Image (cartoon, rainbow, N blue to C red; front, side, top):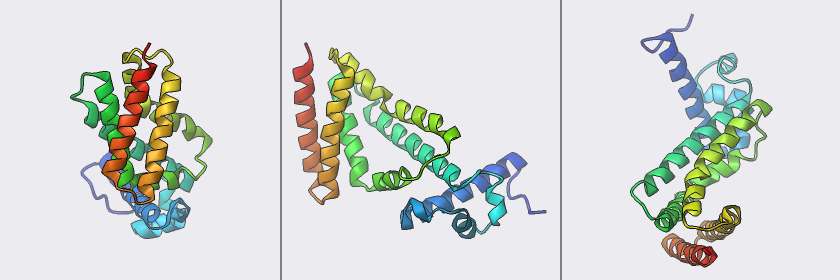
Amino acid sequence: MPKIQAPTIVAHRELRRQQLMGAAMELAIEGGAEAITVSAVAQKAGLSRSSIYEYFSSSADLIADLVLEELDYYTARLADAIKDATDPFEKIELWIAEGLRYVEDGRHMLVKSLNTVSTPEFRKEEISLGHRRLISPLRQALSETGITEVASAAAFLQSVTDAASVRIDAGNEAELEISNAVSFAIAGLRALVR
């Protein structure tokens, strides 16, 4: 019987799960999502291959947990960026800027890689809910501006941030790209207020 490395069995199981998640994250950073296999994660974590199945049904299930953890991290990061703003346009500015700083620091490449893996059907709704939680404060700020077509405005913002992301990824100066994207987006949003 393996030695319990925490005060309780529940704490031990969470410790092991985090150990597996950390190993999978390292593999993803080193080699992309395709590097995350049950065997590779077990070897990296120093555990038996069969022990992974005590926590995850497959490598895709493990990747779904990584996606959810990253969504939680990104959601918290964006919420922290806008927490002191009261004006909806200021919230949107801060939201865009922080989202593009997430691109600048390279973490988004991990998410792109993880999103190339088909997650198990039973995890898709959970991931979809995570995406909705992520975007909810932005949609709320957009509705507070007086814009009537919030979905359309959100799509425009997505296009602006996608274009700025590509430019940042290509090596353009991030703060200039962030400033330009924010200025362009806010001017466009103000034009949509009726």
